[in-house]
Amino acid sequence: MTDHGAFDLVESGSFLFGADKREGIFDALQPNCTVTILASGFGAKPRLGDRASTGSRWTILATDSSPRCS
Picture (cartoon, helix red, strand yellow):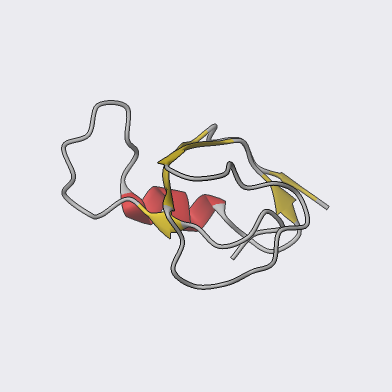
């Protein structure tokens, strides 16, 4: 869950070009941190304030590896 709604994480062992390891993405997505992501999906692009619901059609593939935490 993010402030842009719910996302799925790329599957472990995925061979998608440019995708990070699922574990590394999970570690970067911490409460009170801001991180830039690379996501892929279909439908409307998630926006700030979207409700957090399950059944996301967007998947996080990678992060910028430098989370900014407050």
